[in-house]
Length: 271
Ligand SMILES: [Zn+2]
Image (cartoon, rainbow, N blue to C red):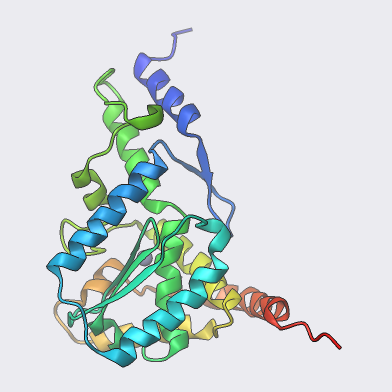
């Protein structure tokens, strides 16, 4: 029997130190080798940098709408992101795009309101983006990358705070898809489907109509039909039949979640 390679041991040791992450709602076990506090700190710095470089919107109605919807979603994800310092910013940019980062930082491009007009529709997009965060998809992507990079290069990975492998701003930026525009090709198909499912349950728990998630998908299709270059959000979030089918499949469960949470949210009448 050949002993396990040292590189494998390094990965295993790092995995044991950093532990595993359980995705909310789905319960899937995901690899997490990175230091969460470090990722959050770096994400907040990155968001601050974006705010400096991008023009904020002056559309009072849209700003108020994002605030209203964002706050309601943030309440139902409280236990999945207890230390989030929520911030919801509308950027003046015609692209159809939205993103969320660790630490509770959410950005929406004004162009998104072309396909997400009502509160329910906006909630569908915001809940999807926040689901990427609570599922720690960025952490998982970085962990997979670190695991691959480590094989054959024993001792090459730097150890950061708390024994977790050190990550750089460039690595984190790429994981968020910041290299080629926000959210561009950030996640693979499986992670998109997971964010759809988890997001659907979040929006339903917040009392929004989950059907609006399908409406957004259809609006995206209509918006980009016949165009040579798809909108940024669509190129990263391709509206393939698989996504719509999954949403329709999960609709009865989402509607049930909505009813149950409404019962919880209802005020108790003391006589
Ligand atoms: Zn997504």
